[in-house]
Every structure is written in C-alpha cells, then in structure tokens.
Amino acid sequence: MKDIYILGIESSCDETAASIVKNGRDVLSNVINTQIDIHKLYGGVVPEIASRNHILNISEVVKLAIKEANMSLSDIDAVACTYGPGLVGALLVGLSYGKGLSYALDVPLIGTNHIEGHIAANYITHKDLKPPFLCVMMSGGNTQIVHIKDYTDFEVLGRTKDDAIGEAFDKVARIMELGYPGGPKIDELGKKGEPNIELPKTHFDNLDFSFSGIKTAVINLHHKNPDIKKEDLCKSFEKKVTEMLIDNTKKAIEQTGINTIVIAGGVSANSYIRNEFLNLKNCKVYMPDMKLCTDNAAMIASAGYYDFINGKISDLSLNAEPDLKI
Image (cartoon, one colour):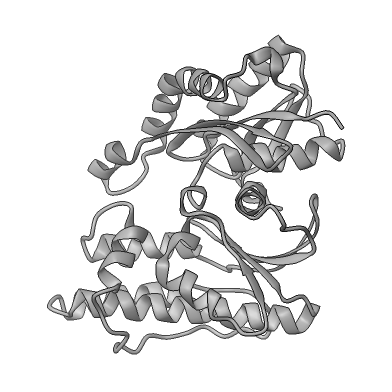
C-alpha cells in the first residue's frame, strides 16, 4: 500500500506549528513556534497578538517542517489544518494558509478538529493503540470523556458544565501569582506540598464535570488567607480535580465495559494526574509523550490522516469554528 504523507498545520491558540506525518503514526518533522514568552507579559493569551504572530511565523514554520522531513511540497498527499475549536483569529491564519497550499498543490484539504488531534497524539506515541477505547480529554478549553468507537466515530459521554480543567488551573495560578502558563507552575509547586487542605468536589449522576466550584474555593481561600502555604494549596487542588477525573473514568468503565483508557490534552502533562491514572487498577492506560500533550501539528496530521483514508475531505469554503465540538 502506498505511504501517505500529511502536512499538518496548527494555529488554534498561541503555538504556530507544522508537521509531516507518514501513515498517521510516523512523525518526520514537528516544528512548533511558541508565543509563551510574549503572552507571559499579560498573564494569558491575548487573541489579537496571537493572530498577528501566527501571520509572522507560519510561512517559516511550514518551510522548516518540509526541510526537517527532507521532503518537498510535491511529496505531500494532503493538507490537514485545525479549523476549531480555538481562537477565531488564530484559527483563520492556519486555515487560510492551509487552503492556499491545498489549492496551489492541488491536493485535498482536511479540516481537522483540534480535540480529535489531541486524541490522535496517542496514536503517535503508542503504535499498538487502536479503537475502541475511552479518552479523558483534559485541556485549556475542554474536559470530557469520549468513547472512541473507531478512528472517526466518537461519542461524548460527559463534558464540563462550566470551566475546563486547564482553565481552572490557569485561573488558580493567576490568583496565586504563579505566572503563565499556570499548569506547569502548579505541577512544580505541588510536588513540594501536602494535600492537607479540604476542597469541594462536585458530584453528578451522569459523567459531566464542573470545576468552577473548586476554582472559586481556592480563590476564596487565598483571598482570606494570603499567607496560606501555596505548595499545599496546589497539591490539594491537584488531588481533588484528579479525583473528579478518576471518579468519572471509573463510572465510564462500568457504563461501557471498556477498560482501555487514554488521556489527552495539555493537562495530561501534569505529573500528579499521570501517576494517578497509571495507578488505575484492571485498566490499560495510554498517555501521549510530554512533547505531544500540548498543541502541536503532528497530532493534527495524525487525525487528518484517519479523516483522509475515511473520505472526510473539506472544500475551500471551510470556515473556522471557534466552538467546534466532537
């Protein structure tokens, strides 16, 4: 069977990224230009600044991805680019560039769902992973449990009713003046603390999540007692949100009978969460390499490959969808 080379483009937030992936699993290049140092000045991502920097960087990033793969544009079979969810201005930069390449090269355009990309990051890390499985998606914009029935067949079993878990991490870090991005800061500080602070945990009869309550509780505790030990507050916060994730995962296993568990998204880089999922009994747990947890284009190329071989091709009228769901 002919090898298929997909050029992936990702620009949904503050990383401009391009990658070439062979047959959905073999990464030939994965170039990421991050804007973290720029947005640190503002305590979070400024959408207009992100969009402008994507425009400045995208051509060079794509050229580097082609060069690192030791290929030429004529070798590309299709262009996969993120069209949602994300910041609309940022999405439009990558999508517009991808459309231009698709038209110029006369190859198919594959509009790719950013969330499905995070799931597909695990196909790169784990060559043996195949559906069906349960995925616990944990990122800055999404928290949900998804039944992956097949490579392009998904059923959302539960999702957050308010804040995504990554959003809660960032807001808690901001109120504690830990800096941006908040997730890694809480992870590092939490390693020095003890989970000795009582925090609320939301319970639902279904598989939905809510992180606004615990976020507000942490913020109120910090306001009322600014001398509270930050290490302990970070560790207590990590422990409680992880319990929420694990509780719903166990319920999803009981509901579906599936015990192959995949975690995905930026928050899956958190060391405490990773360890707790690895300790799940009677389960086979997969998680992406650390470098594939955060936004990258290899995951988009991988997800795009499975869309491509299943005939899910987009046309040039495709628009950005900032609130795109699975």
